[in-house]
Structure formats: C-alpha cells, structure tokens
Length: 171
Image 1 (tube, rainbow, N blue to C red):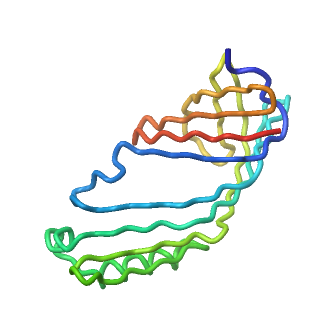
Image 2 (cartoon, rainbow, N blue to C red):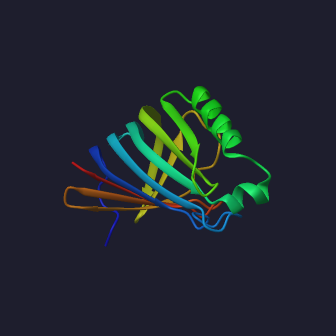
C-alpha cells in the first residue's frame, strides 16, 4: 500500500508531465520537443506545514509547417516577435524563431534556472495528499502520493486541463 510517512526533506530527482492537448493543436504537423531539468527540495514537517524550493532549466523546440502559418495568417517573424516579448516579461526565459526553407518556422525557447518557491499546509489521508499554498486562496486538488523506502512519488492530474504530472524525490 502507498501513502506512509511523508515527513522529512526530499530531493527532487525527476518530473514528468503529459497533457492530452500536447501536439493536438489546430496545426497538423506541428512538432514539439522539450528537455527540462528540475532540481530542489520538498520539506514536509510533522506540524502539517511544507515548503518547496525548486529550480527549472531547459529548452523547448517548436516546429510549425508552412500550412500552420498560412492558415493562421501569421508569419514566422510575427511568431518570433511574440516569443521574444514573452521572454522579456518572464525572468530567465528567452527564445527566438527562424524561417525554414520550406516556409515553416522553427522556434527555440530556453529557461535558465528559473527559481520557484512555495510554502503552505498539508494533510494526508491514506494515499491522498492535499497541499494548500499560503499564497493562494484556491481549494487544493487532492493528489496521490506514495512513499516506499527512501522514494517519494507524487502524481497530480489537473482537473481543469487534464495535465498529468509525476514528481519523484528521494531522502
């Protein structure tokens, strides 16, 4: 059975996400590839409080065929401008796009060590973990968790988007 004693400090060893919408945009032939690295810690105290300190870095590559640009009535230069201005508002994120010989567009986006942190309270019941961030007034989505030896696995499925994320950590 899963669940078990979650109290302690856990080192993040991996994060894997999948979305039912990934690669199913209104653009047939669109290709997306990502490489992300997550590092940091999760700390759960016996007082029912938690903290997360994490760093995310990596890159993403998006390739749009010419048909996508034509059907959306946009150019690769416009996509590039949009991506570059998004990067200026998000600290640590940059990107650019270039036209392909076939009239499409290839974009790359890089995240260089974007830091995130969170604190709050948590409860467990069986193999269900509920975390409430001190900076959010939203109701927490219960998640599945499992502790086996020195390995923690947390599996979250977002009710809104259907995105599924699994985080693994070790003591």
